[in-house]
Image 1 (cartoon, rainbow, N blue to C red):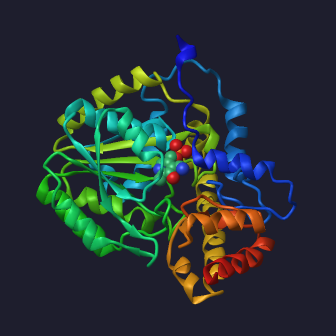
Image 2 (cartoon, rainbow, N blue to C red):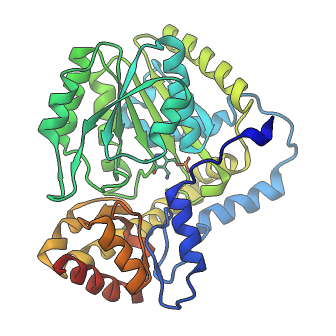
Length: 389
Ligand code: PMP
């Protein structure tokens, strides 16, 4: 019976949150958290979203079903932001999903439907939720080396070497920008080289882009996605608006796919809708409707990039401050997105927790904007002490 179920090994990040919450020390620092925070530790609702929600409250006339495609206008409006010059390519179709996670799951479901023998090449380290999602659809994972934590460098040659062993039809999972957990993104030349390997060896790139606009800018952060679309006849993109519109719990994302023709894309989308109906029938509406209203209301559309830039500017300002403290932390100024890794052993990470009430993942991953403005100096001093020890 149900009582026979074994306990689930609990997510280590969730454990970390519980430990931090239980710590009575006033001065505790939570850099384990996975969301944007402002200088005083809040994750505010963007003013453009508040305004869109007001419009929604006043104008929405029904909550009747929308169907498994969800909000079609939402997906149409995301197209140019994500795809740039490829927005008019009728070989590319997109659909609203419950967040980036829903997009990833749906993308892998589609792959498992068409090619259950496909192996998924996943960089190490990667976001800890990637492997469980891939395993859940029954696909096999093959790891490729991605990042050397000790030298704070992308292991590009090793990565390319590993991809030489990929078989036609295999999937290559890539982070579009703001790599989680390392902050280390591929350079434009490296993207181009990966795109060539994918095209030559008939590998299917699946680009996960959950932080567009958190790195260099909306356009710059989408360059990798667009390079893949230029080079490869088949591409899958799992996109999230949860960070760049700050609507995390409302679960807003989309899945885009490109195949060799408009007709084959339409057929693939038929399977996408079928898989979506089996899993969630249709995606939740509210967050996507709010994002749609922001993008469809000229005054709000004009304000959004500025509100996004304010989040990006804080991330990059905190990075610069940390980087200026010690040459061993300088690499943090050259990385992007909310996360970077510190080359600290598990013991040292635990010692920071005990001694300084600094909560970061065992891997040394920390969220740069988990730091309030008044916490940065104490954090860097403790980290430098740990590096010296
Ligand atoms: N991919 C990566 C790399 C992420 O870090 C996240 C969020 N933590 C997601 C996808 C999915 O985000 P969500 O489902 O909240 O939109």
